[in-house]
Length: 376
Image (cartoon, rainbow, N blue to C red; front, side):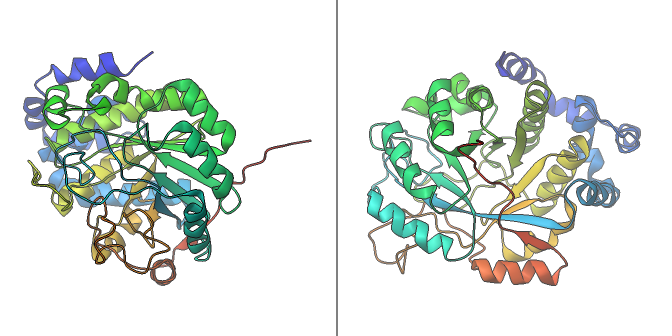
């Protein structure tokens, strides 16, 4: 099985024309249903749905409360390495960018783990640049021996792997996988990924499914909104979600909604995703898939993240650094020794995030999972 034939089929369709052809009655019909199909998702992401955002928001809020309660799970990223062999024109870690490169030794991984654990966080997302030679499976396995002492849940956002490699990391304690397709437009993808292993569109596209087969508990996908036509990328993300949920009901399929942010390099977004567009995308996802986890990162501003709390978001990052060693170093951006992957907008600490959530009547969740190695 593969999502690739479905992606190819939809890439061949005039999706922009289909979005424009959606009528008010199409939107109303989608809003009146309890179980939505692909056509309903298209209707809710169309320009015709914009006047119905308030109605969509009310229904999305009810569904989020029903399935998730007034809770927001918190996590933070830990960057292990920023070495990269890819030439992705939009990324600060692009191999052509003249930035300082570094990778944490195991002792430094432990320093980072202690600094993060001291904030109370229990869910961790580890990231590397896409360099298999540097951040090898052996290296990642060794890092997990350290991180498992501090965190019951560790997810990875690294280069795409084979199924047996994902299974090895599952055995070492990794329980979550994040893979951003970046864009589902295969022709555009080729112009954005000029060199390196990531240039293989289909291998990247099939990585989430390999993670599902390997035993990942959570698989998180998404497109980097702004690289191409945001409606098309968001719509195909939704279809990818449905594909994985239908085939792997035992896996918690989730989605992230990142927008392009400033970074090292010259590439700028080709389409602007406004706040109202982000809200429409999130609401459409919630109505289309009521049990879908939705992550909003610190790419977004404090005000925006607080405004969208009732509308479908279930997971947020806090106390974030996008630089290698950024949690245990006093300054991850000014000393010239380390550079983040992209700029963040919400710089609040974990305590500040928790206070803000509680003020709005939400419970910050630090832990909802425990890794058990031996049931006997």
